[in-house]
Length: 97
Length: 430
Image (cartoon, rainbow over all chains, first blue to last red; front, side, top):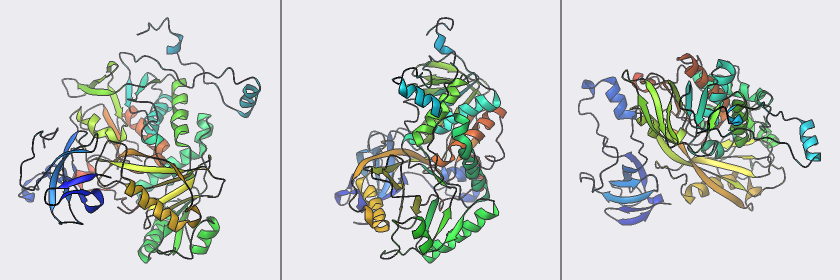
């Protein structure tokens, strides 16, 4: 199982967390103003990166907070975890959103 | 690259037929005289069509392109060895008891082809219609499965609701007495069952090769070239550039990677899906059993191993492995359902990469790029559909438009709100 570094609690085993999907997927500020394709992209299109992937995790069986992570999906190696609102540390995700 | 005049192996030899008689004769003469089941030709500079992905769906599509649509100047490109991806890693379950009309038609199309496939391919697929039992453990389960039964029967697909005692009679190892989540009944599809997953890939490969299809292994696609009109012109690979006007991508968990090369973005996420087998034991498990609520499914292979699977790991990954806690959870379910297996030793555990769509239904059809076709999004349930998927994908590539059966499974359905929601059909709770 993965060992994940919660930015608030430190390194904890994977069963303490819930995966939160791709990070930095911004909900359109005015849903009524975007096209159906743009809305569908927000709901469903994902990078599905084979490489460094920016994603969210939630420490559900710990502090309960969401945070972000950079993980290489070719190896499951975590490069970094960072708090909501912080910029991802270098290297930047392989596929810019 | 060999000049064609020199290399007899660029011409497909007549397929060596398998039969009881040939097996006996060759067995008595030291197993001499068997020929390779498919060639390993060098890729040509150009083909009429290319299939990217040498799994069951891709090899089957190549076979049907050649056999039904007379497109024989085609090649299957596989980055590793054929059947080495999800085709070689699944838990071999075959059924067609999906809820929605669109899905029922697709999986039943596959099941009907399965029933004659070994004969059609002259290959032992170990196809066994031993029955698939889907267990109900709660009032909700019972209501959902009864609804499934009615929907299936309205679509001419066999499915029946049976009592816990009948389920026990059908599958004697099943625990209906002393179990935390009681067995309230089950939906039984008698025509469902299993097949040997490797054999499907090899059977299609051999038959396609005999029709002239080139199967190119160790050939990874690294780029897709488009012409000035944006249509597909060629693929770049680790074995050179190959021109083609029609390219069908059947690359499962790697579909996002491949399609991005042509600028096509998809609603896919690739997750690890694990499975495991026990040590081989004598025949004890007569059918397939699946439990959504207790979260595992199981059958027994012809080799005697209990083949067990459950749900995906929770995060996207291309590693083909997952966490032990996921596997342990599945085994707890198996031990609860079948107490006689509590002492069984597990032999092998592995993972694949499953491409999952938001509605858990596949995407089979055209893309925004002319000449580029995609067959993906089968998630945790692609093996059962192999011949049906291959058949309609070949139709789509050959004719440039979908077969009526795959017509609803468009990429555009996510924009248009026409989702085919089969989240309940995967037989493990999401």
